[in-house]
Image 1: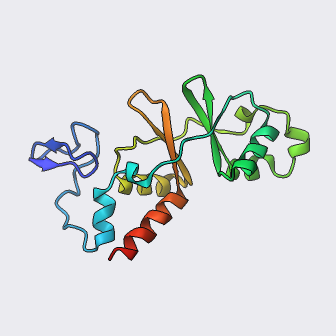
Image 2: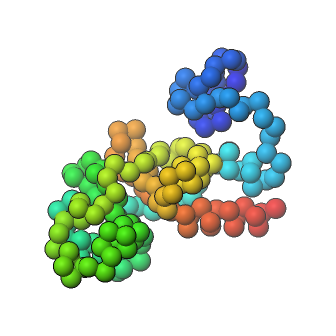
Length: 172
């Protein structure tokens, strides 16, 4: 039997993909990571980062109000929700790239016009290494966390990962 590096499920030797989560098993033969930080990355789960409760807005919320919310709460993003369904994420990066100083002209338009639709998500029991990989490959600064039904339950940011790395390096 071989353990999946993402979800720890046991798989039959020779399987190419984890039967539980679909993660490729092609690199399971590699040596264990040499440092404590690297070992922690593949052991620890996202839940250990103490994810923040996401701040949510409706798709119809005026983008001006959402910008005010970001500033007042000192946060980098909000989740755009239609009821319990995640529609998108609006980040400070979206504000800079898509509004480009035209808040006066665009401020009353709905945030859904400027959000990033259908964001990548993870579950809180995913390993931190997987979150780092997803953020790196997608160029994301935030990842919403969802439950088994796909409903948002938290959010992590690059800042959470930096705090995690700093703590792990000091634990040497």
